[in-house]
Length: 437
Ligand SMILES: [Zn+2]
Image 1 (cartoon, rainbow, N blue to C red):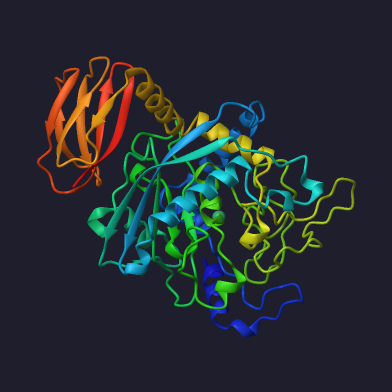
Image 2: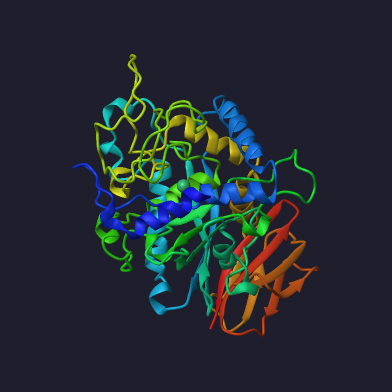
């Protein structure tokens, strides 16, 4: 961990490090918490890193049998906005913009997709994964979310109501994204976001998986969310790292099992590459020995030059680099294979739910009306439901009828706000969002 301390101290003396013409005039910093998180878990749960590596290796191998030309997978998303200042309470338009960016990046409909160098044309493609915003939860807090040099635990408080954050909504079936003000331990340093890779491995002893299910998901600093966000990181980062909503793309990549393309080798402080040792597990990402945080879109950068045919330069276009967001535009086929394999195995419930909801709503012609209402609603279905439940935004049950009829009059008698009517049928579950005003 000495390395991390050095990086941050160095960061404070910005002018003490000189870089070449192509490089930014700042010292490098660890903008994503993936590495710290994995090392922390490995201390708490010995063998964690080894098991994560094993799952990524297995995913890479299985994924090759099922490239990204299979079914479209849709992941339901819950966004938690945890704010202390009003500026941190991001507008709906920023959240919708970020969901669109995730969809564009994962479907390769991003406007800058064509910026990828032609040498990579054969290895980049559409992941065929989409994201659907299910709900936005807003929580006003008095707490701050501050990590330390060895642990993400201080930031993870954003994921618990009891510590001033917002409890996850069903993290097995939903991708929870928390957005808030992340405060690294040293003033002036930055953390854009972090995510944990899947940890619920079947070969783990019961109760020993890490992190706990309630911590699964993605955390993003409120200034790194959306491309239409008026909040910015302080100078010089606001101009050097122009935010285009690519931090969530990168962190969802980790959440679905991807590693950094340089496999966290190399010296973060000096930028010196390391060209032997670990790989990122995706065979087609060009081998590279460090990230491209400081170089911008430098087409000459090839940290691990191997004088042989087919040797490719460092792929700063890859979402799993630290390159500036304007340089990034692609996932590779093998990265996509890993993510799809994780969705078919370790995180399979994420895609099962969305299919069930879509089909049931169509087949059973569920109607919930009026909407908005004064709290008196009617739930009408074409086949007999098994159970009807109503939840508030925090996931708290406010109404239940476990002997429903085809037509049900419900008087909610609750405060004004947004609620979710969950209707269970023998063939699945349908959820409708309603407003009480
Ligand atoms: Zn990362």
